Image (cartoon, rainbow, N blue to C red; front, side, top):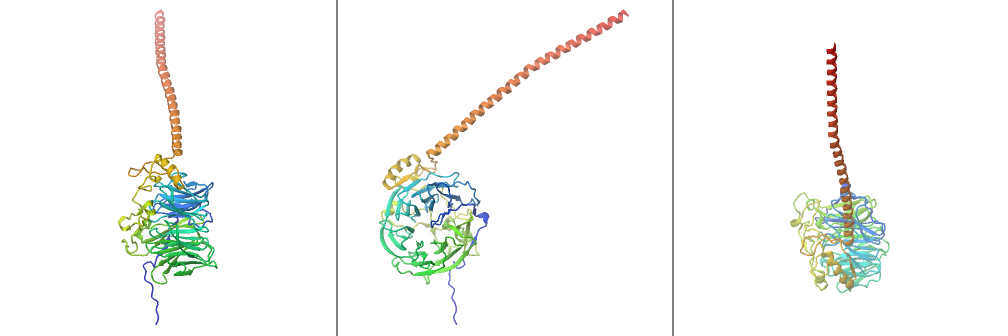
Length: 535
């Protein structure tokens, strides 16, 4: 007698549920670019979406509490001269975001707490090197201020954003780089390329360690490092069937698993949750989200379930675990852009009866603090990302963890970091460091003072001129109103004076009339007495 043993896993019953429309974000003009990007980035503070914009590229940044219908004239981040292709939030600062565009420039922005009150056009840093469009931006998982960019010029550059210097330049790709991903501690880098190959680099020395054929299809491929060192890839075979594979870094030519899924045309984006070891496959143009669990037992990649919707998706973003609601056993939260302008929020939940904190569902997760500096990393030091327990620091506001830190700039221990200095210092330091590494520092949208001091507003010259013009206009209005008030007071005084002069004159006239009438009466009585005597 044969029987089937059901695999034991606490994530077997994970299910997805879409929030109500009034709890989502509506009326968003999602970008119509054909570039293979998720068009969305999310962190516990903000939601960023690349949108259609006339006269250049832009993306919208929304606080999580600003749900409902978004106004058509909502402020944007719009400093690029070409369409924005990719955006990424800094994992160590929830207010800093990087963007790559068709104008060949990478810009780093600082978003104030509470969101934007007007359109933002001045970045904190301009990173200028690429000769063609920049379609990929990626932050280092544990080192502060380290940003990777890749462009259609086949170049991969690793920057120190704090100083604008180029740390590493990788120029060994023969064609466009489709994707890149650091491993858990940032000591290795995996890339996929249009030549159908997957490569592993030492990101400090740009040395190619190994390469192999990834997927045989000609369409775009994606590759990510898993927490324990394996590599997960998505792509197409020769028959244009979508497939995924699991590989070991030391045997890239021999996939551990290679599975065909379907025949859709959309590129699949693997979104990885390192805490639960779950992978969510989201295809561009798909109406489903498939999720899998990676385990040490065969077949290693276990299919769990599929979340089905009615609308195809144009882009998608995954909330970091810091932003999930632990009171409802939420293990993932997606922000999914539809063609009709709706950003749908989808919550992935493990059903549990208890309301207590579930420690088996929430192991220590990534913290917002960097483990090492950019200088330490380039000097050869490796460090795992800092983790913390959600049980100790969780705060439920709008259904998720809210950072206990205020709007901070990216810290650096050495001089020359534009992101944590006032405007006066940033201008001088930017001039020196930009010539060394190719980074051009803008005059600032940094809302912080230097290290150790309280937050202070640092405004650009354009903002100061605008404020001064508004002050002059207000002064002119005040002077005009003062003159008007004086004129009205003078008229009122004149009117009161004329009234007081007229009152005695009328009183005198009334007195003289009274005396005249009395004399007339006396005269009449005298006349009457005289006539009586005569009779």
